[in-house]
Length: 233
Image (tube, rainbow, N blue to C red; front, top):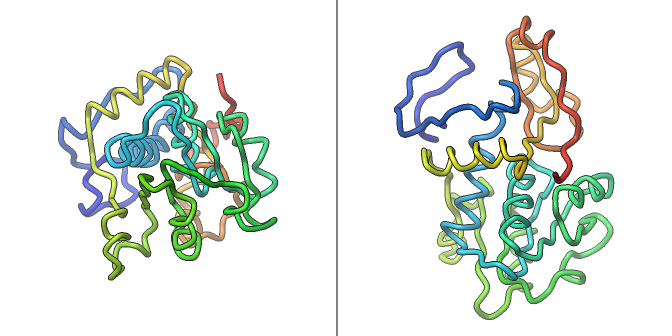
């Protein structure tokens, strides 16, 4: 994973540093491997470096079926936390298979009615969801957010909660080892050819709303099958 603020593009090669890379997990393909670093590292750093999540604590993950949420659920579950997540109704069974103890359909009603006394809130949604999340925390609860809209906020507590994922060789290597051990499962929503890259960034490519969308060369895309939905192993 390169520096978040460095120049980047969809290219066959890129310039990086040794401490920003780790070996590709052996048990997954290149499309799955490409989907891992940002989502997995953001989840790891939010839960463990920032929120200091402890075994047995109650964590609420907003956007559990998203690119970061799928890793946050799996990591928190493996850490021994009680995992609650908000998703669309059609993703409830999916996130339960990843390790969520409780899945809340955020469209069915206020999540606050089903989630209280929370130790850690991991927010990937922002906006009204973030504003309402403070009320579900315990007195010593912690909230972290990666929602882009929080970066320019003037509110001090949101400023303290917001973070941007950083490259980290040791963490990325550990993530790779957990993938090879079957503890972590990458989730690829769909794979599209380079010719559809603009549509992918514009959000006009049909998606399932689970994990990452991967752009590949036309040749590689034709030879690669979109992986099946992940399940806890």
